[in-house]
Amino acid sequence: MRYVAAYLLAALGGNDNPEAKDIKKILDSVGIEAEDTRLDKVISELKGKNVNDVIATGYSKLASVPAGGAVAVASSAAAGSGGAAAPAAAGENCSLAPCLSASVTPGTECLCPCMLI
Image (tube, rainbow, N blue to C red; front, side, top):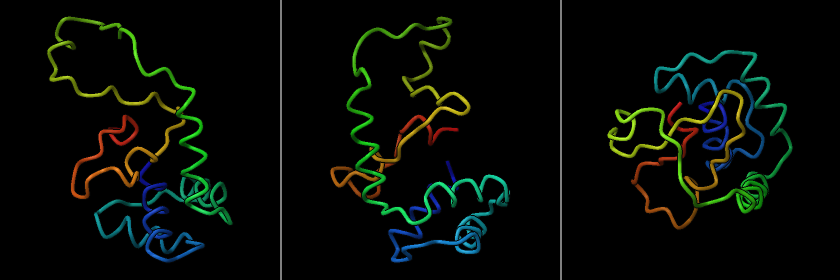
């Protein structure tokens, strides 16, 4: 997820086609060492795509996700954990669309489940 976030930061900052060195620079600035295999995967998946189109596609995919209903809790201790969102399962697709939405107030923390990994 951090690689996607760094890619989006570079793209939203005006770099229409971020390269590995651009993403590594962003990650290094916050003390994260980039893994080349993951970095290459993100770049290959997003290369040549318009970031706004990718986000819009994510919104359309989110429209098919059920938004209500009961959630099974494994234990009573988990129920008292303050109501934090559960992290996304490993390998599960996630979209930054809710965190990058124009309706999100700048400076507020994103609570997207994939951001908690």
